[in-house]
Length: 368
Image (tube, rainbow, N blue to C red; front, side, top):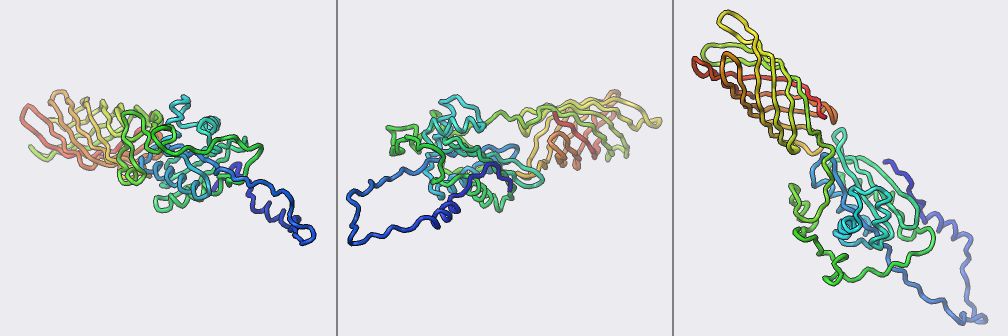
């Protein structure tokens, strides 16, 4: 686990100071002091938790991270404002999301919180990477920690990161802030009410969020999907083996340019050189096909997908060609992936009738 700017604990200081401090004994002769110091009850420190953000992973992961941060922060003795306070403050203060450390400081100050916490999560080499950033109004920090976790120990890792990074409520540098106690949650104070939601959104509890990871219609800020590469260029080689009207073999070598409409939907144009089987031997030809693609993601931690494709093309001197396929694609890096089409029935509409072939293809893709 990597920790930068982690606060110095107060336990060692208390133990060191205990050796020098001798207990004061009250005697009958001396009597109790005439004036006792007033009892000072300090309000609990407030820690604002900003919704975590995930990059290229399932939506449920940052929700679990946020929920665990809130649980651990409260367990450490902090008062944690309602879930909607941070995102409402970001909107009202016109701050960016995800926030930078300086933005976290502004958020804490603007919501009358002593500290603010934000986390990011992404996947690397089959594990989640969680990074936590903490800003403090007293001017210390920012405190940053990062660690990796699997799905089975994600909560435990987040809990450990928060405990190692978040200063104890008793640790404070400088003068005490003059925040007022947190008002009761009610409709009269919608900024701090736990049931406050932006107009047009439906509030959902943490339990409901974890039970339905496919989407959230409650209030949530989402950044522009900068991690999505809108275009991809593929180099493909494909074997086509005929199964009707006598066996034949055609071979394709071509390139395909795809445009990503959403994270899972693509459309592309494929142009290929084709070596076809002709009546008098082999012949050269050119093939053009327009293709649509939908991807089924198999894992939240691995960029492994099943591409489902359907295409319509034309082979000169032969006729229209219809192709459907399913296969596997795996990302070697954020920019490169390899793929195979394992099931690809292809239908050739020839002047002499319909011919059916089964194709197998291998491709390498550059995403940009």
